[in-house]
Length: 452
Image (cartoon, one colour):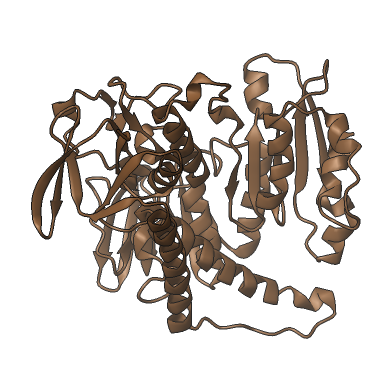
């Protein structure tokens, strides 16, 4: 009898687990209440990056004089932008659905909850039914965190999901939250011409990132006219006529036409019936081991609900590893997920990407490292592109030369970091990068120079 594998949630973790397990012979049922492909992925990630790409094109159009072209001012066509976003989302959603159908996965449009360790109750438009499962994957994702002192209205006080695009492009906007999502919104709205204020609770944007990386981004923000309110925490956001007023704990007040909350997310584990199955959670996140198992061996969690890195790439890999474990492949040679080696990117301008051990982290641990940095201003392709901002930094072991990590700030950083990510994952040495015959002229040359 085939393994009955029930997956709750059709985002990157859930749909990847479904396709892999089905290929391996499992009888897979996937239940999704919103969007196959994932609400966080298709309602947040893809639309935001689409708007950032459009905003980036507008920003680039303002720099073309330096490339021997006559200056042209682009304007936003809101209906066309909305149509573009919807088209991309639908294309991706249809692609995932077709793949799942081709693998024989049973798709159910409904809401699921556990009513026992092996029982899943499904509520659909046709009614309620219960199915049995040999293995269960919880992959229900997350939603924007909304504090008690804020009441988004979707018009002027926005969550991240109200912005793709907003009903009316803001003349001015206050972004609350200076993490990854917050700085992307600063970049996006300033690219579209809005006057932006960023409320920064600490003394630098991106408090978890390399201070040198944050400094480059802050400098770019200031050049654009972005106002940085450092050391301030928002305590209230209220509408006053056609304005939005943000008040901070240090007494500072910001008035703008719009405000957007970008202060993290919360896991979608409410109503899942975890108590009925005896699943242990921590602040709403399902506690998992290296196989993504909860404390109940046949119940897994992956993606945002697992409390690990909230990245689609990590969720997809977790889903694959769960499928392999459910189908017994961990009994042979098996590489476990190493979250410390996950590459991540921030789609600001310039882009930011990093992977592995960070310089500040190494110093905090008292670990000996070798750090080399090369500015893009020394790279011919960056000059050709008329965009010499940023640098490549590589962290390595001084004794062995093994690449431990790296950071990139600059154009196409999200693509270039893949080289360092591969080196970190495969335990390659800096000499392996140096001795690679890379393309010239290319931004990747800075990688080889930083590895020398």
